Length: 302
Ligand code: C5P
Image 1 (tube, rainbow, N blue to C red):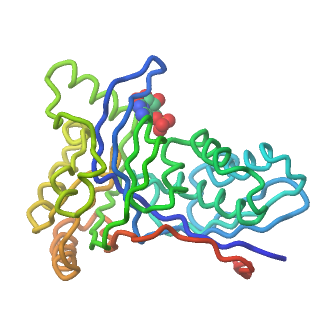
Image 2 (image 1 turned 30 degrees about the vertical axis):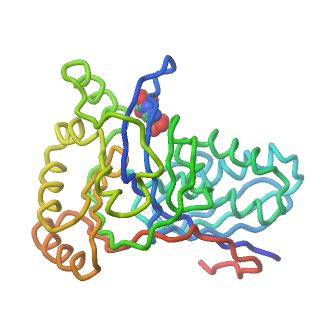
C-alpha cells in the first residue's frame, strides 16, 4: 500500500509585533517566520474509512484534539473523499514552546494528503483549511522557509530563502501561557507607550541576515520576561555569546540565537549548557527549502 512520508519542521519568529486587538479578542500580528532543520516525521497511508493517529512520543492530548488528526478529518470532510487515512507521527521536536510543532504536524498531514489524493482540494481550499486549523498552519504550507506573516499570522508573503544560518535553541523545562502573555502585554500597553519600532514590516528589509538582525524584534520580551524572570536571565546570557540575534520564539518559552558560524554557536552551546543545566540546548540551523513529500515510503515499524 502506498504511504507518503514527509517532515514537519519547527519555526522561529525572526520578528514578532503585536498590533491592535480586534473585537473577537484576537490581536493582529506582523511577523517574519523562518523554518528550522528540526522536525517531526510524518507518514500517511489510505485506509477504508475514518482517521487513525498513532503517536510515537509524548501524547499531551487526546488524538482527536491533535492538529494532525484534525487536519486529516477536515480534509476528508471538505474533499468528500470516501476513504480514510492512517497517520504515524514521530515527535522529535520539543513541544509547546513557540516552535509551532502542532501546527507544523497539521500542515505536514495536509501536504501528504494533497500528494496522496493528487490535488483533490484546490490550493485556495487547502490554504483556507490550513488557516481554519490555526494561525501558524499556513506558514508550514508555504513554498519558502522564510515568509512575512500578518493578520493572525495566517496571511503570508513567501520571501526568497536566505543562506542557512547556525541556530542555538534554548528549551526551558516550563512553558508560557499564551493568553497570559497577551494579557500582560495589553496591561503594559495601557500603562506605557509601546517601544516597538514604527512602520510596517517591509519584505525588502528581510533580504539579508544583516537586515534581519536590524529588524529582529519580539513584543513579548517585556511582558514575558516580567512573568518569567528566568527567561530574561537566559536571554541576557545568550546575548553575551556573540550571537547576531537573540529572541523569544512566539510568546515562548523557547529562545533562539543566530550565529555567523557553527563554531561560535557550538562554543556558546557548550558554555551555556554548563551554566543552565535545566535547559534543553539544541544545535540546529535555518532551512533553505521546505520539506517535500516522498511517495511509496515503507510504513515504519513500531
Ligand atoms: O491561538 P490560541 O488559542 O493559542 O490563543 C490563546 C489566546 O491568546 C487567545 O484566546 C487570545 O486571548 C490570545 N491571542 C490573541 N491574539 C492572537 C493569538 C492569541 O490575543 N493573535
